[in-house]
Amino acid sequence: MSAGEPGSVVRRMLLGSQLRRLREARGITREAAGYSIRASESKISRMELGRVSFKTRDVEDLLTLYGITDEQERASLLSLAREANVAGWWHSYSDVLPSWFPTYVGLEGAASLIRAYEVQFVHGLLQTQAYARAVVKRGMRGASAADVEKRVALRLERQKYLLDDSGAPEFHIVLDEAALRRPYGDREVMRGQLQHLIEISQRPNVRLQIMPFSFGGHSGESGAFTILSFPESDLSDVVYLEQLTSALYLDKHEDVTQYETALKELQQDSPGPDESRDLLRGLLQLS
Image (cartoon, rainbow, N blue to C red; front, side, top):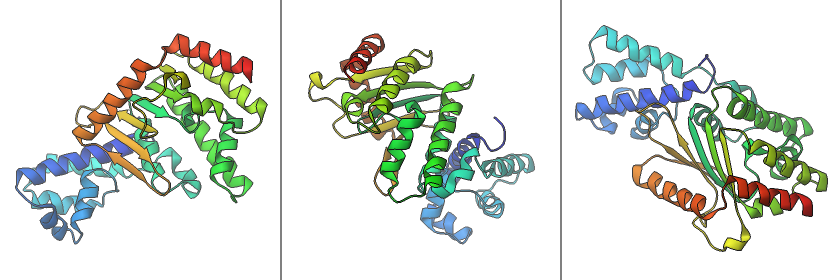
């Protein structure tokens, strides 16, 4: 993975988890670790979760505190810290992104499996350019045309990285029928979006299912969510929950398990990919 690609986020997470293990092995509290680098306990927590960039001096001081004197081991971890600070390809879009979203883009790009449930609109990775523009305009009221187009361009860039690349991850998505019935843009935009879903659902790495209204209540009642899984065995799955002014990243085993259970139930209760395509074709004929 070349410099500037999503690997930098994974490296932050890997370095953070290694620093946490070293701290815990020495029986040092986060508070004491924070004091040693002139920072707070919460800063250590964010570092160990890979949520912030790393200053070389801070990593050096922590390694000293944790009793890591072997030069080769220190050099390896400091090299990881430098690689973790490389800006991602999405950095140039940061002026039109919410503050929490670049972290998600990095995690998404590093995942080997992306599982999601969406109810409000078609998932961003499956949107056409015209549909994406309609969604962004609705969400960025008052924004300039240039800012809207930049956000749309980022969405299309994410699709290129995650659906068109030879090393693309597996993408399993359950779309609520509500997302297909709620119009964004005019009739032609919606028809184009439905046709796009039919086509993209036939890609080998995409598994698309529709949760129909006719099923009634289901396990997705808490709203949209995404579960990200990574090829590195050291990294736990992460559940991403987007809110109006922030986002939550859950990686505790018990939290992840509950969302995995909900998604499995959604997948079991929804028609399979072939039947879901038939449902899409039916909606296209009605539109």
